[in-house]
Figure (cartoon, helix red, strand yellow):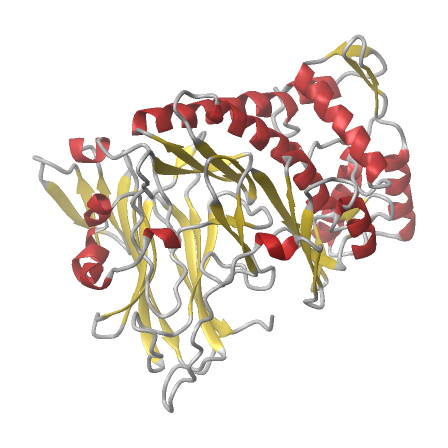
Length: 534
């Protein structure tokens, strides 16, 4: 393939031969004028492609959406309903500032944070900020409410299992016993009158479980405080707050089929609520071929395993986040009893056998999903027991990086477009920037902006996404077995243009193809495989 390197506008391009990608550095006024509000539209395909990603408008205000990577170790989506891009930009800036401010207080991964500095002290009362004191107090409350199922020192057990995975040897019963004993000790003492915290143990502590939800709640409030903002939706890694005059469609990820364009487990319609999902399907460890969840039971020292996904809806984000984690550890009966003590709380659990357990009021929050037409392929067509998975990892840039525009599509051996799998962009007028995809697919690209939705799922790592192709063309018909090329086109504002492609044989035999990364994509792979059993 060729690589194109140069500026766009009045300048010319300098062409040189390299292996496998095209690169253009964008410095034109055109790209600099691209809206700061980037809508990353995952179009969930069932035979044809839902498309338009223009802001949803009503008579009073529009909804502006932006996406970022590397925010609290995962991805961030912000939706703002207001009257202008200027006000939306101000609301977004307020939310981002609050996220940075609170992360600098409670993060255990930033050695400069207030919490990390406090962790270096021992045995003496330290005056702490109101926010850190509040989070530590909340951990005390949830440790009691969950009878120990939530504990900031669960990191002791998590560390034990990570070390076991590195050695591919299960920890001994004695090692587990010692870890549990370390968890059961007191780790701090709080003095509300003086707002001090005394560090009383040497156990590693991490303010996970609901600290992210705590930050989301405050970031949403900060954005809502901006003049003329009518509603805000903040989604960080699948934990979401919906606040103001907006009903938000939220798709709950299926723990056994969690690609971005997989059909959801359920779909919710929420207003002035928070939702959080926690599960074992995106993070954990393999030891001797067995998967062990990153969520551990502090009371037993064992990874959680009976519940593989828990989604909680509650008026308060901290409650939703704490309960979603705890419900992976508690029994379903214990979870139901705890949820009943918190007004307005509903939940959906998925067990390892696939059983769905829901609270009495859950169904009132859901909306029906369109039922896909599952036609069987004719003879000599795609084997519907197989699927093609596209894994992509975006390049990690410093700080809060805006997600690039991107297009993913399939062509046959004659380079004829077969299927657009996904398009990520902000407004119709910028679609032509994805010029390779646009030149051959624009005529068939139709859809409804209302198809866009927010996804609640277990937290995934920043920049890592999976998409699937079910072997159908844009009209919903199965294609023939054979060789197909997957094109991945990426362009970033003030960044580079990249086009990468990979050919894979979609016949009877499983196949894997790795694609070389570039300036915008750290790596990608294609996998033609048998479908997993849900």
